[in-house]
Length: 68
Image (cartoon, rainbow, N blue to C red; front, side):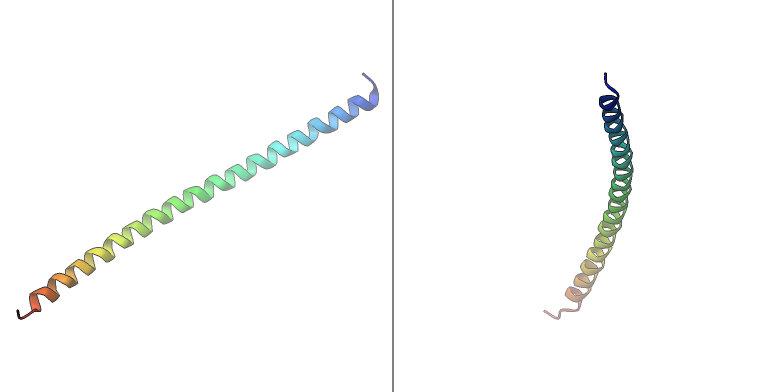
């Protein structure tokens, strides 16, 4: 193998290593974002559940106040 071809191959391997490292970092960030979004979704679902319960309680009280 000629020296030029060897250097070219070596450069391509180095580029692949760099790309893999970059993709690994990006994947870790995406996983962290996904976990954060799951936590946020759980919190929003809980708030929605609480709001629904409060609204149902208000409706029950309003119906109890209805004179008819």
